[in-house]
Image (tube, rainbow, N blue to C red; front, side):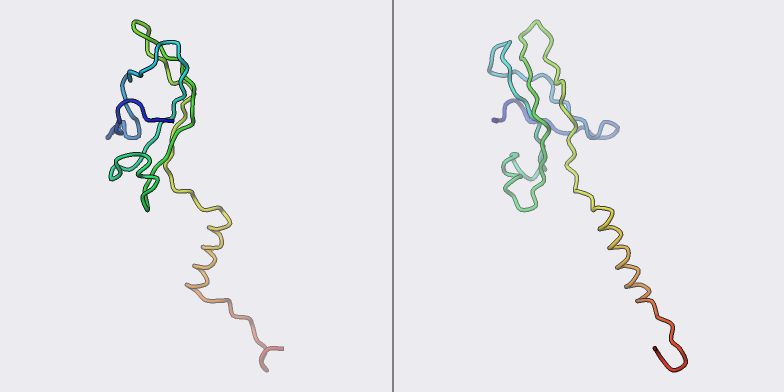
Length: 122
């Protein structure tokens, strides 16, 4: 895969999370099938590859789709099948959250005290 076309930025405000890359002119003739993947990375890095290599770099990519290119006057090809991208931090599992909550309760209130008889434990 090689980068082709202009770099686009995310919209802001009510359209935050959306990208408007416009129409891209590619160096192949109409009728050619190409494979497209949308990539994103954090701004301090100049490229997707630089973000991948940088310590703490943030990057993500979409699924790969095939697109049959068109030529004017035909309408540009739709990116059918392109799925959303979530550059999210994975959430902890339910078990991990339960263990963390239990540890927090133990730290806050201490271990439960066992009842003792008059003469001490039996």
